[in-house]
Length: 452
Image 1: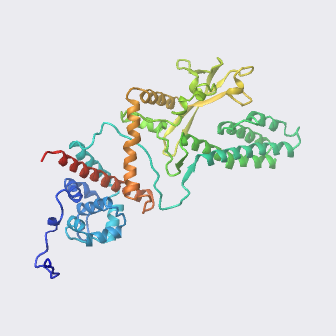
Image 2: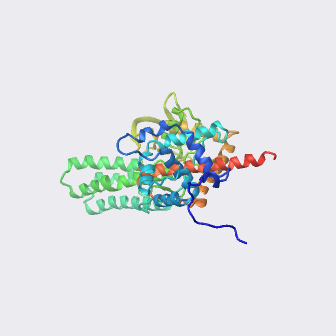
Image 3: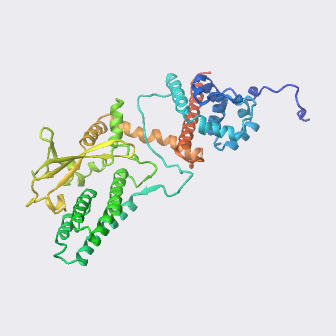
């Protein structure tokens, strides 16, 4: 009437492998990790003390846990005690949550990249993936930290306008508070800025330097000292920061503060790819804007001017020549050095295009990185070639499916650990788990395609 049921213990432990289907994902994880050379893990174990759990066993249970949407070290330890596939991978051993957490965050931080690369090579050798193209995109995953980590485009524009108003008000106060004859030289600085124009950090830097020179002549001028301090310590750094934010934003609405290189089409990235002899099919911030009619008709954009390399001069649409003045250097946060060249027109007086070209009182001056323009030209030619549109479409689909898997299917929307040293390995574990899950899916498709 009933199937025989007993809870009496067996004399011998049961073989857990009998309970795991042949095409189960856990077998794919087990096979992939077993193929790794034990020497890969040696660097993480300097020796001494009691014997450690085998790193391959810990690697298996962590990868498999991530495929099952289990990210907490306590939940992984619980699964190893209660879940048959986990018990099989662990060989019935029971590492506690501290051991698991220490292994994935500390021991593996310098080894995980090698493990990931080796598994990737296995997948490439067996034709699961192709390494001909690399598709890059970004996604936002919350940090286990401050929630105010994103820069929004509208906020940057609003704060930049307010800052410019503060600068104009500052100079207006100088004129109102002091006798016109006493501060006659200061009155000339405001028209240089262009009272109704948009300020640039470069122009504000020039004015600040002039005021600092005047302060050396009048060291007791309290108002002048206050203005210089306000410009140098507050307004100028903020304006420079807003300009950098707008460059990083490009066509996007926001980017994360934790990603200072959010614009993939930066000069530093292009230089890195060129050094590695990798063809850069990477869009830069203004790529889509360049296609618009407004951009092409904007006579003030240096991209619409003519550059003569032999003479190192620029010619604007009005026929004026801008000659080289000086070179400056900008060091970005990573330490990369950007060389910028400064050019100035001989005379913009009486130019019919002046109103639409510049609102500055003096002659037009531009600052440009010739290397960045060269990289952008190369990228533009590739992106608009026959192959470019097809690669662009694939770039929109290849990475997005991965992000959809991690965030929607696996529910991974927030990091559990803090600090780049701990967060970076967590991304590595997720990537390993994703790749092996795709391998298991492809294996099933291949078997299904074989006639029975």
